[in-house]
Length: 227
Image (tube, rainbow, N blue to C red; front, side, top):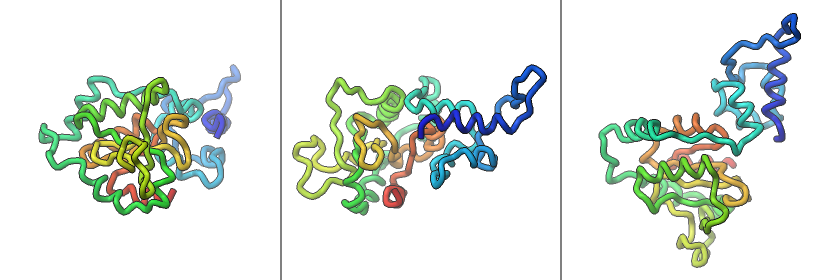
């Protein structure tokens, strides 16, 4: 979408008067709002739904992010502790967590799931998987090291050479997914399926990484079917 952030910011800027010194009198802490007609007019046709997740966030931050989608600031150590408390209010990680992706993705048709390149974060502990996700979303995938990916739903008979036994792993806390028909390593992370261990912090993940789409595992079939 090019420099859509600049386009949006300039559209909003024109809605405010000029001071005697020629500078625009824009309020501080202006929010991105889909109720703002100037913002709506600046958005690409038929793509308004892609901007709903930014509603209510700081306008400048959103516009900068839209112009520079790879620039992200992840969670710090203090924020991790707050996230763990919110995700696991009973202190311990439930023994039966991370079941939903296994259950629900089983009904995602191969014709849809095979079009999405994915990687399940499942080889470390549940707390470590959150830090692993944070690193991947903040710094991107390290292209100098081998990074195995697989279809979200692999066609039958595929998997021996993928290192996953077929489809991307589903028993971890997160599954990172590329855009439809794109490559995770080459094109980056567009979607993250959040398994049930971390349902309580999806809103926090979305706020921290607003250019990535976070979806509950129990809603993933409907979500990817619509895509």
